[in-house]
Length: 476
Image (cartoon, rainbow, N blue to C red; front, side):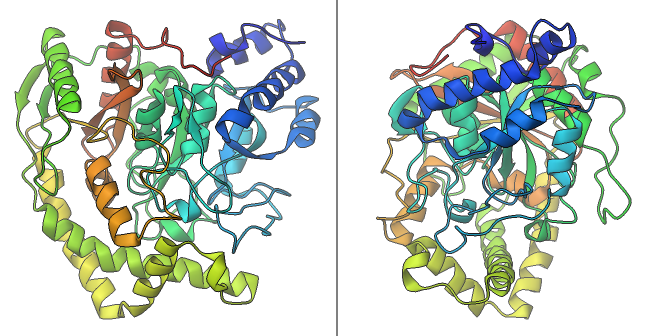
């Protein structure tokens, strides 16, 4: 069966069709496969096709979760799927195959989804664009000349094009929120350790990286976090518990929130005027909804924060690569890593234990500046990007020298990292469009462990400033 209106449903909507026996999981899988085959030549979003595994799973039995029978995609980074390759976007790791599901993969399956394949990612998720030597550039369905963001760009591109209603994504310095903003999606970076990353997630040790999904609707994000975001025995740092299900939160009014907003950047450089104007319109929208909205930056010591983060991330990356080298059994050859990756590995190996621990100590103290800002504010509003969505090639990790690459990344992605350092939940919503017809994401950051406020506000904005009627060039 070819469902002409398949793309008009979100994940919960498709699951409801399955529950009412109006469509079967097998028919949904075939509808998703049809769209991969139609759109992937233009997008390069899906890099591994697990069609036969999906077809077999669709025959059942399936767990009775909220997304029973819904096709799903998993980012090709840090998320083991039994029998599937996990290249991490790297020529060095391209032949790795996982023997069993990871912990979060199991929870996704328990939620009822049917994994269909894996999505494009840059090498080891380092950049805010999904372009790489192994997997090639992933393109934006709104305009394929432009990036889909990174490092979850493959997932965002596929969801935005209607291939699947939602897909796995991860965020270490903005890698859920950036592609969500580029592709016009809902992208929530959850609180540190809200989602299970054990026993697999060695890269999660410093607390920057989290996993969740990119979706087209707020309710899909809420329902999936209800399904996956729960601690289990063995979690060393479980997130504080929620008061009630997030699906109940989205039915509640957010009340009158105290919202600070700003376009302050770590460099002090102003953002693009078009993005600034979109930010100001969003502030006005929030005022019109009855919130207290004040222009005020966080005023944190960005220079000290980023300086402290450097040796911590460097040492962590070197340690992660060390584990990978042990598993593969040899050092990478010169051609097997991209220039930025080589620079990160060589730099990380030079970090001493004292430098790494000193950075951790500094981060712990500096994060207090970020966290205490929210003693007075419920929400902090900024853009996600500092510029309109750039074209493919502007941030090219293969062709650009690492210093220039990072300079451009700092220009385009100046806002997302602080909430990774502090562990706070932070959400991108597709509230605006640029003059050239590409989405502009606005970012809402809340107190530590307060996804509830984000979901209530997001549901209000989805109702008052809806985005579901917009369609990209490549769709359906």
